[in-house]
Image (cartoon, rainbow, N blue to C red; front, top):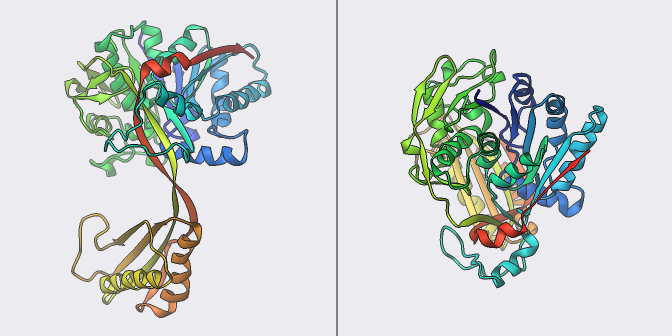
Length: 448
């Protein structure tokens, strides 16, 4: 029998209806990808003011839906632990107690948070040069947090110790979905063929409803039930090949085209899709229609994994603020461009020099290049990144005091409105030798 793996979450805050449908469908593994770089940044800021924070708060809601099925034999895997796996564990344990579910075994994976280890890692020979540009990281003094993207095998270890629920910090998105198949099929860490196939399966699953017709750029108008789109299920066979499907009687669409689109999503080189566990070749995969809302993924393979983990280092990057104004016909484009120039000059006169300015003329060149002909309306989006909150505030002050009554005519606040100054963080990617990380990874499994 194939292993049935359900994607019950593609991000923290995902639709709990989809989570419930995955649970009700009777999958073997309920898998949740709750993290992204921006999510970790938000969790860091929460934890800075509340030491009990730092994990995905909706893990309790996911647990409430999932734990009855776990008590019946399913297993739950989530990376909702983020920067505080113990906090997530306590939240899940609290739900288990409320439901009267005693005896569940909770597994925790530690070691992804290396915020306090960066100096040690550098001393041991790690380079924290920027992975894309090669630029040198000049200081560690302003680091907010640092997290390593671990692979599937610590999760596999927890499952092997009998964990009913596994909570991790940062792991690669694919790892959450690969781990149950690796565990069930007994896939060795150097079985590059099966690992390559499982990495592709994990990539297809990681964004929940995006593979089942959400965000589809093909005949999207033919996708039924977008208001209640079903989340994906992977049925994985002994060879690591899979069928992508979804719960019956749910919205959305699983087709060769929807799967193909997700296959190439956020992929730089499809011949070398890098994960902590394997380098997968997506071009070796074939997609075959296997019936209504069923696509079989065949023939993919992988090669030896790299000897490094990706680590992201978050650093403060100033303060951001933005305004949005709508200008109407006639001369909408000219008015919006004039308003941009007025804002530029007023900020300069106020002594504000943004670190970065981003301007969009929505309806006349935000995405597809400049539109010269007049259009019925244009939304000017004007955003700045400044060194201080006070400087970022100036864009709001100049907008409110000036453009509403002293700029080009026929303006109105757009749906964008204004954003109060907010802190901005920079994500700095680097590569760290696995041999420096693996000895510090810990797996703990305890009974409730």
